[in-house]
Image: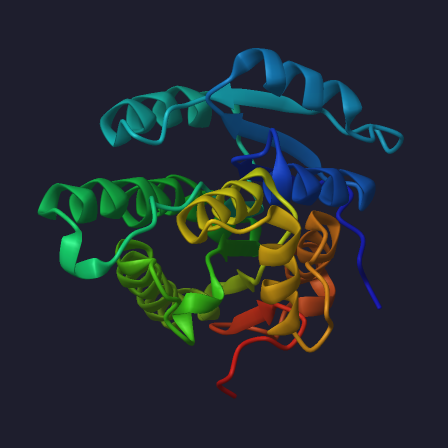
Amino acid sequence: MNLDLTDKRAIVCGSTQGIGKAIAVELAQLGASVTLVARNEAKLQEVAQELDNSKGQQHDYLVADFSKPDELVQQLQVYMQQHNQVHILVNNTGGPAGGPIVDAKPEEFLSAFNMHLINNHNLAQAVIPLMKKAGYGRIINIISTSVKQPLQNLGVSNTIRGAVASWAKTMSNELGQYGITVNNVLPGATRTGRLESIIENKAKKTDSEVNKVEEEMMSEIPARRFAEPEEVAAAAAFLATPAAAYINGINVPVDGGRTGSL
């Protein structure tokens, strides 16, 4: 099985913590040179120093605020002038705030749409020409199991995540002929800062202890535990490799079996 990413360049968004960082680490271990993307330059520098470079990888980073799509486009134009190869794009950014959909304001949908779908699209448009030239491309979107089964109290997120999945499927149909695949990884409950925040908020609202909320959430998962970021990263990294060349346009839940749909 060919899992070698030597001489490949990967862009990994949201890569200073959680799932994004775990993916960057995994891709570097497989030999890829990684461009980290996030808002905090100090954290970007720290993570870049941690990445494996034993195969001569050249890691760098791009400081970008995904709440400002127009600025991201300008930064991408400069970045593309400095790099003549990009083989892997991992789209990943924090999810919208929770809450019932009936209470959501229109601007919440617009903001989430820009942060997720529009930024994903801008990033993809920037790198696709280089992927076509190389005859090798992997666009991997980190979304949510809500793509298959909407989650309670995540109205805006459910809506936007579904739009991203549909965008990705459409793009996979158009790009497959060029050796470019587009796939979605759907994490379930994963031990990240976001999950901790969700658990703490639920505990406050229900006047419960944090450990009780955790136990209740885990009871809904056949694996009876939360995922570690590295487990989600392993799925994303596999999809980035030559071994996954014929996997295209799919949604891959990494959720311990929690999602109720097939």
